[in-house]
Image (tube, helix red, strand yellow):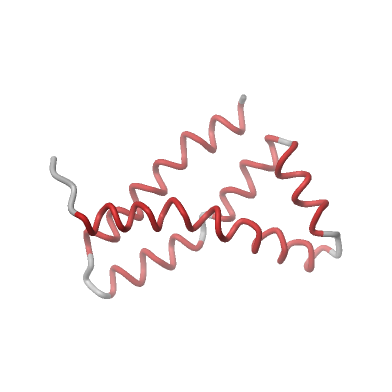
Amino acid sequence: MNISKQAWFGFAIGLATPFVFLPLVLLIMSFAFSYDFSFFWHQFTTSSLYASKYLSLGSIPNLLWFYIFLNREAYSTARGIIMATLALVPFSIYVNFF
């Protein structure tokens, strides 16, 4: 199966987005729950139970990218974003259980 450049572009966006938005999610949570940002960052880096949950929250902006590229009829790019999100699932399961 030949994967187009647009699909690779979507895959790169889909992999980068959770790691870019993860600090933003933790910052929003620190404001919402009146805790310090370092508290949530420490939970993310030390506890595998919280790391999996925070990584899942960081993956939510992939839905926005998917919607944008789907409306522009860039189906290959949208497919790449879905592939990247599915590629993060085994990592999230590994972090959660091991």
